Image (cartoon, one colour):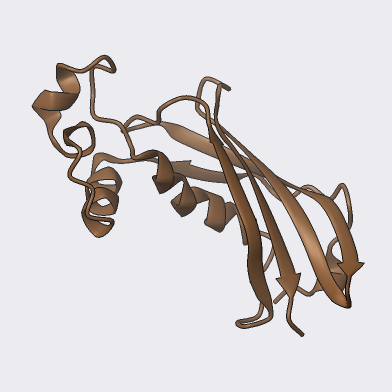
Length: 141
């Protein structure tokens, strides 16, 4: 378990690696009830601009949250997402090997609440950015 006090501004987490699979894409689209054929139908993907199925952009939550927790689990109920933002840059394809880097960008106390602001950048196997994200959490304890 990790506490608010253990975070340092500028701290970089160990890079988190994840490989996107067709199965992950299918299961995610099914779980969120997204019937877009670009996420679920091979033929639609092949005839699309992309030439393949792609991962729903919001599936980034799968590898972003794992990366965010790679330095240690936050105790249950100890932190709440105050804000989260994503900037989707390019699609993720089946077989893409993704690496997410997390940096503590800021840490502060405001109105007696402890906040930590994290920045995450995910690159594909070619070193190209696929998504940038930010998460601000506050500690309830």
